[in-house]
Image 1 (spheres, one colour):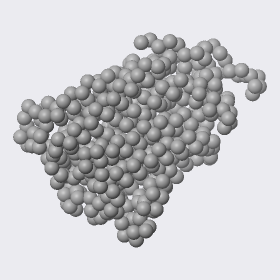
Image 2 (cartoon, one colour; image 1 turned 60 degrees about the vertical axis):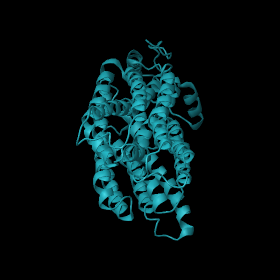
Image 3 (tube, one colour; image 1 turned 90 degrees about the vertical axis):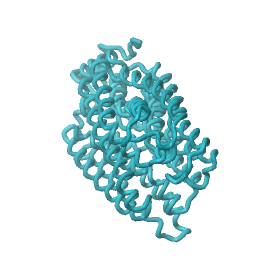
Image 4 (tube, rainbow, N blue to C red; image 1 turned 30 degrees about the vertical axis):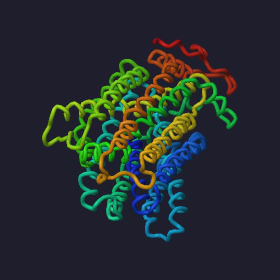
Length: 483
């Protein structure tokens, strides 16, 4: 439960990163289209460096363990990057863009170091299929409270108090983010301490050594990795669209005419979000992670289509929690379902990465959780890089290439259409693509039971020498899918 907080420690930076666009356009004077493209390229850079970080994690072996040094280093680098990133506005014009870009690059290195451990460390925590979803329950609860609380504080307190996203706003907001992240990171380090030990890595001392030339063969031969990484990438894209501050501004600040509603509805949806997360994990404990993942994607298809229909007829003033109408109730239910079904699978993928790692161990005897986890991050980063890019392109097409819309921007048919495309149409397409990939993901409940039995046999084997073959009581081929 404590190790879960590592994801929360990095997620709060992801939440804060959504305000970089307002800082860079409002205080640095950069154009909206330029910033949106830079945000996309930075995420691609994040994905490119991830495999190297995965190898670094796999090769790390210190008296403090494999994961803890990486977690601490990543958090420290991220703190330094934010201290620089949000203090550029006082520099000379010639220095702003180079240091802005450098700070973004450094931030992504630190963020990736710490975030990668969240997936990589899963395999060491437990191999019990009923215990693994506990991570999703705790992560869902903490992340919901963190993002909801953050949105309420920003939309209902800090932004009104400091007149929007001003220097005074960032002087309060950014230090708060860094302190909360550090506290959560320390608790996560404590949580993984007992399991950050070689005996919990793969098959312990019997784990097959892996050289650099082996990595490509592993990626090429691991079909579950290939299918899940692609599906998870599109799911992450969808989740980012739902959490993007520009999208929320258009939805609540312009279509409904009150940006403060973004904080209010976040508060209203706390319980539904927690129920979505808990129910997904409960299903996973009984029917397997794959089953739960697919069912939630199917729910997302229906709810996203309904959300687009509702927004087509929405107008400023329609959504009100002080004067609740049937329309407000209908929208709240549909929005809760769309967000819950769309975002919850992102958390499930964190745990499913451990299944993929265990599958690889059962086939090859190797423990490469770091590299396998960063393959998720690579496709995740490349696909999610299209979130800010897509937002920039769509807004540029409707006349907002220089600056992002604000709460003072009047609603137009073009902005309405842009909002529907960003929060309904694109996520719907991404979900359908993810479902297609999941048809070919074979690690269901029964398959994972076979995998764990084989790993247990491999641990109990007592080969006469280091070159002895690993037990083959269970075939290396995957059983056929039950669906």
